[in-house]
Image (tube, rainbow, N blue to C red):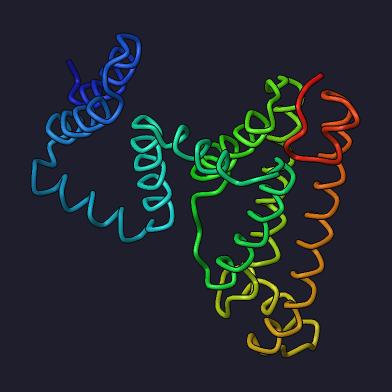
Length: 237
């Protein structure tokens, strides 16, 4: 067989491994090692390529690591812990949880700190807390209501990160804005741009948080009655 076709063994290993529902991380590692060996680069070449790829694609590598860590924590009770935590907060509502997350997200985004986005933090932490707030109020989570909450939580993540990341001087968004304005005759300093962005980011997150809290109250009234719209600990009739 032509040696060029042997490198496809890695793909075969991935397909067979996932078909047999084996450990995903183990499948990927075995496929990578086999591809390196049959491709002729050897163990040294494989480690060199892996290190070079990690350094040149740090953002993607960190994103993958965050997903792996989050998946491991989720498998070991992260969702349950998040739900139990919010259950101890008196009168907590899903809208309140999402609004507070937006504020926290904006603050950390200003320091260019990411939690992994929708997949890495909203799904395994914020959504269980939102659902936990429903259960703590004595209601059963409604599927349609939970789907609405997913959209609200994801929207809050996008708004807070979009406006918040520019507050950190030197981020890709700030550099893009600066490089776009410069050919048009506007030589904008990054620090001044960040200062101007502060009220914009605060207003954006505040308006979004208020909108989602109002929307959440309407949804609770729709699915659980008028009492649930005005009190987080209202009981189902």
